[in-house]
Length: 451
Image: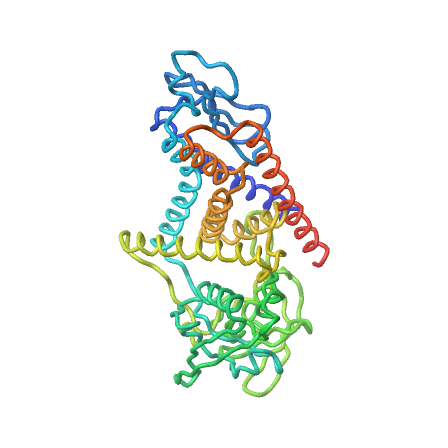
């Protein structure tokens, strides 16, 4: 229940913030272009809070349904206009001004992503180097010769420094080439070239959660080797030593430090049996886990820390105030290009449409990222803001991109499209969005049933 509430609240916050940013872009540029703004609303439906201000007596509202928002400009197509304000109506402003207003919403979404990434890079983002974990025998990775501990240095000739860049490179290369050319560095420091041939299997591997399973390896994670012990922790009291490798708790296998954290956190104050390897000798320790309480939730504590021998697999992406500007611009551009490329590949069938997420799945991601801390939530907001900007630029009549097409046609022919043509376009656009949302809801429900 707590997780569902967290997801719902995080989703509402995310949508409210990103819609406010998007609509503020329309509002601000509209005002700059001399248009009269009648209403600026966050949410749809009946207003629950309204403030009227400015010389134009603009209504600023927060409405009951916080899943969108809008800016309402004065427009002769929507009703009578005072002759004194006729020149300030949206439909009477120059075509370039109208296009600028329509572009402003998506532009502000991209600008928000730049700002979010800038904050992340200034604060520092803990990042794991793209190293290979366990390789499944007989898999594409095994046939290519990938080994445990190999670090990915390049994909298709492009340098890779972290797993985010590696994921982008793997997906983009796989769907365009049906194979993945990589340069890796082995545990002994030597480098070599490998090739993963996936053939016609590329589309299946783009389904959510299928990439690593399909390729046959998992990202490297720190093994559950005890690097330090808390003085008052359960592990020290039971006799566990530094250098011991934890392999199971109550019979549940432990392969990595992440597994250890997951299993222990779910057992506050419980008596457990911890199996370790000390050298080559297996040992069992019976102990009672400690507990930690945060935000009303209790989690188990063993009192061990990760071994320092794995620290070279991690680094912090941190830049100065000015250096973070160029890094955030590059990251936003890379994420935008990847989003556009993957969406285009969905239309051609090269990428699975199962990647289309609806509000349920987005809410789950919002809750997970919010629970993981501010950095992860900011990263989530940046990615969703980029997606919102890209989607709104699609040439669909009910979106900003479709309206830009209408305005461009009007500018070229010297008069607006006929009302009938606009209505037909709106109907086609609504149908397209309904189809898209149907896929999204179907995918959300299918993911829930598969869990």
